[in-house]
Length: 447
Image 1 (cartoon, one colour):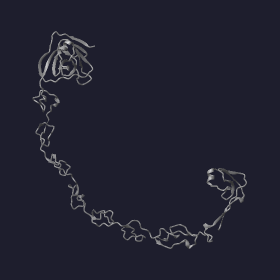
Image 2 (tube, one colour):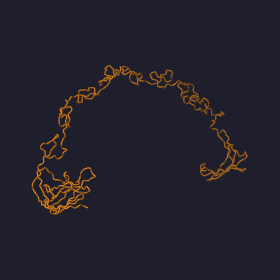
Image 3 (cartoon, one colour):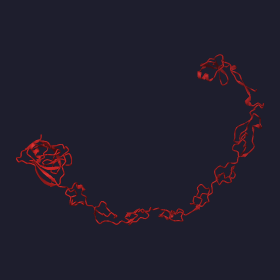
Image 4 (tube, rainbow, N blue to C red):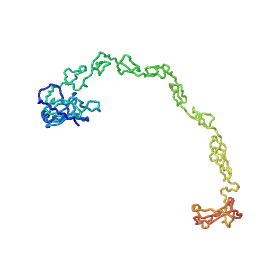
């Protein structure tokens, strides 16, 4: 519950228009909420005495430090109240009024600013409620023209004519140093010269450079890179770009010779070519070889040994590896049926294909075959073999009397059955049958 305080003052105050010359800015309206406040109620008598004539007129409450803690537009109102906000203890900065602090009020009436003296002091108390019953005193604040500048006597830019320091951060601290822009140690951050300037001495300041100048303090881009190498003009590796000979022993003596690694007479120790290089000519350099080349100076492993033998590919003793021709043997040396055995390494012979010397080649001898008879009878035991369609189709049977005969390796017939027009069937193979008349064979005969 708010504590209600009534202040009844016997004196009467009215608006007084005397001026207090000072630099001033119109205070802003309050915006925010710190969580707790105090209420000040303006009765018609008090509010009317403030005499707000501008449609945008507002009343501002301030702490002793000038912090705005509340405001209210009051034009056209007969009575009102203003909330004065407390400091928020949860934040590090002071953002509101504190207990027992005296609150002052100002009226912003258009472009005019007034100090408003309330009929009694307003002392801040959290959750308090104060009623202002008697008239207030309104005093016009006459704002003189502001001259903005730094008012800090210790600042570099202290302004003796300034009466208003708009922003303390605009004051510039004195910083001593060399302020001569042509000096080596010119400090563009310095604003006060301390006689420390050093003359500029140009030169190469790179200690690793060939022409380093230890007296220079300003690099003039004249540095020359150190280039190590042989500086002896008579040496093989004389370097025209070198300016520093790190080690005289690195110079190499000129050695003339053939420097072409692909040449026949290439010299690995030569470093200067003297035009003596001989072209490599590959070939067989073995004078005893079959393909010896008298112009070759580099053996390429192509030498072929001399091999005597028959070099006629139509001969039976033809030797494909032979390099020198020797006696050849032909099939015509024997008879018309003769052929070569086929070897081509010189070991081939003539093959006699008329073994009975009848003038008829063995391959042309006719063969008479005796067709086996169908099996008849049975023995004490048998074996059944089922013939399925794929097997029968593969036999390509075309004769109506065709039959299939089963025989042993010795030619003994042990079973048979007709197979023309049959899609599947079973043949029985009989055991321990001794009828030798069921054997069959083919007999060779001459045409």
